Length: 321
Ligand SMILES: [Zn+2]
Image (cartoon, rainbow, N blue to C red):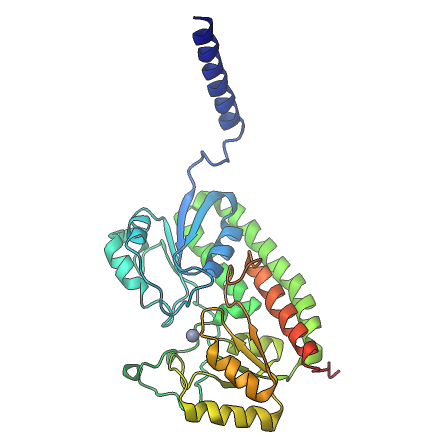
């Protein structure tokens, strides 16, 4: 009997404590948050910054997976069905997402609806065509409509954040001031860090590298690395033996000592090329959560820049200022 009383008392006490915290802290997890689904972890990171405690954000693609070829899991149709906001990169990056959007049957997040954000609006899209690339998608080529890896320039991050801000304000106008303030802080943080990032990279402006895929036109334009060739024969197309041989010849002739690859590309061919040229293969994340320790959009650039510089140093590439 006494035991039962104590147990009842404990239950009531626990519930009271629970209620106390909920009432005390209405902005916590029990308040209704806007459900945001992004296609990528970079968009997720920026949306979390702008949306703050008003949003719950989930990314469809993992940061360490190849963003061009995402397996559209049906579980995301259910999540999109309940989503308030859908944010995507745009261009030809997420052709895989249309199936999910169609299946989600949520008119609020369809293209043209207030809850649909295309993050590339207003971005100066690079129209770099890789030498030898076919201007015909039927050949398996990708990125003919402009390069979709534009988030790898932090200044484009500000434009992405603006598009996300506009979307959040459309669906939740009552939080306009809060979102605006977060955007102001985001821009300020980008500006502060840009000065540091550029300062670190400046001595290496013009350093020639080879990349696996045409991922880096925006990054290289901003930070001065010179991507002169690619392991892929064309974007999305594996290299031929002739291409590999020509690449080795060029790297030797021009003293190119760095091959950059995303974590989701095979490593056999880069390693082979490195063994013939004395180059280093540098695996760089192309998205937030692409490797351990890269937790947000700012951390992505910290990681890329610090690892580029340490590999330059290992290879004896000296600052040229
Ligand atoms: Zn690509």
